Amino acid sequence: MNSGTRIATMVGSTMIDGNDNSHFYALGTYYPRSHMEHRSSLLSRAVLRVKNCSQRDIEYFAKVIARFLDGWLPHAEPHIITHVPGMRMPDEVCACRQLALAIHKHMAPNGWVEVRSLLTERRRKKRLQRSCKTVFERIHNVADCYKVTAPISGYNIILIDDVVTTGATMSDCARALRLAGVKTITALALARTVSE
Image (cartoon, rainbow, N blue to C red; front, side):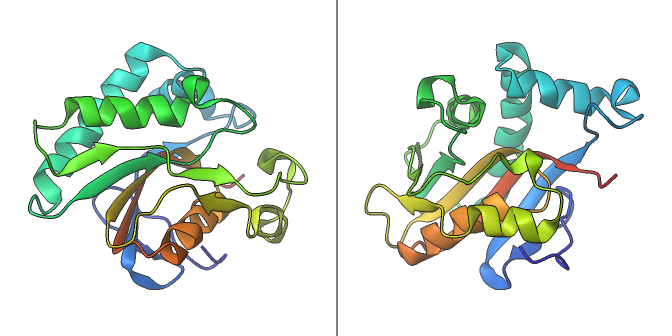
């Protein structure tokens, strides 16, 4: 996502990198712990618990997202739910993977959606995204960082992340998925970070 791209809530969407077949949705706004609104924001505190792998909060958000997807996605086309890879952690402890699995579990029984870990780092980021101070630094830090691990040409992808700040990581994951030949990308995050 370029710095001029607006991140939308579930009631609207925006294209990822201007691609008509890619849309992004977020449930709400995340206030980082350093922000004065964090303590009064129930969503921010719940998202932080998801990032720390709280199963109760993962299940809650998964049910909300599953209902949204069940009512919105075309059921006749195959979809794969995948996730943004965790920072230097195995899939088993990645909160985004756990969220993707829970979303799949709570969707109406069907044969048109499966869940798979499709993305991995092709190179390590120079530093943690949260240590980058500008949008340019965040974009440059993850540029060409991710690759797809399986053939997925022609599939519709649902890409899950916990929090989106500038969209740099989500956009690089979407770039890798498009290079692999996916049909559409629906990117979902629990929240977008408010700028301080």
